[in-house]
Image (cartoon, rainbow, N blue to C red; front, side, top):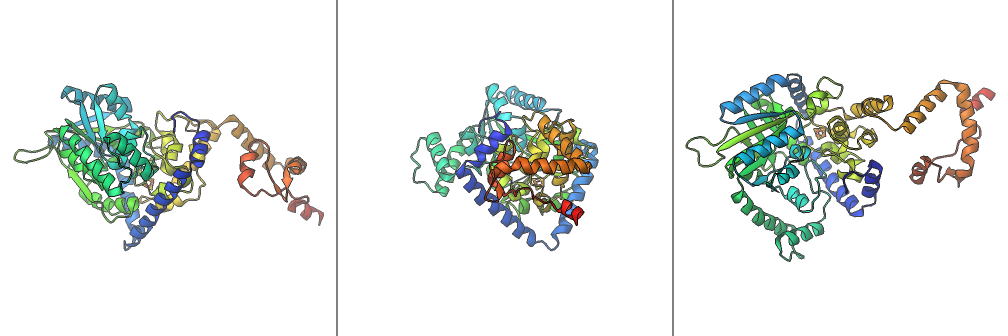
Length: 467
Ligand code: SF4
């Protein structure tokens, strides 16, 4: 999907993409069912969720203290810590580390924060090649595309599309290749890159303040190779990823894999504390931790603060009836689904984000499945309210005018009666087979897909008065 398209256009493209519709229904539904089943294995999942939420709430309320402790412990373990105020600074820090070390090839494991800062483009502009090594991320990179799901970046791609991409990238005829064959092709291609790269760049799922340990939770072995084979490891995290203790890590690990993929535990839970020490046989010579603010401190202390509790599990995407028909690209930002509809308008640099809080039915399913009980519907409503009030997220003037008029009519019974009479007469030309069809203006889209009955000749209220 082309960047810069208006939200309504992105939505229409997604709705008309049959292959996307089929892929989303299959994959998101599967993840959602797996989560429900994995939650069911816990004795008291609600208690586990309450505890997880309490950990995140406590950490975010004392974020400055835990970030300071994390930085101290990472440095004590031999790492270098960089604080980046914004995405531009994060890009500069990472580019400079690589350039100063004289490298021009970096391998990457999955990191949504690196997507957030547009790292690959920044590195390319500096003459550094970044190769994605997560299978889904590599597919997306070969396609010149963007991830469309937090956990499953290539959820929108079919096997046939992957066959074409891999055939082109490797020069092999893979027309008859099944999925294990395609995975083996990726393994073979990427293994060379791990050995050649001077730098490995990873994300961070959790950073433990008491030990300075960086934790990644993955299902592919690429994360281990990225963080241990190249001589330099750069880990990039949003500042909300810090947690106080290893005990807290254990509590959160009860929920993250279960909520993301329905697994009790992922194939790899990797814990990195500092670079290679004397006497160790593997690991990088240098470890750099880049901690990104990127607009997060502006969210602290606001009614949106709890959005920073997010574990990036993707459960709210998988269950959301809107995400399940639109996919991630229609949201126009790095983060999609309900959490994206909240965070994208709050983070700097988002384009055409004013409509995102409307991309929800407010059914509440996202809150029900969020492992840390983030009240996403409340925040979506708050963003809508801000949009209606005009600051800082501005709804279109026409929408504000409609709701102003609606409020006026509802407060004045005489106006209400008059509006009913006008509505009854005005809607008559559009009534066909007992329902309003092909309504004018904004009603057109609504009446195309919904059963809108005509206004009654004798409304209930008037009938009561006449009795
Ligand atoms: S908001 Fe909750 S459900 Fe959605 S990705 Fe974040 S932690 Fe997961």
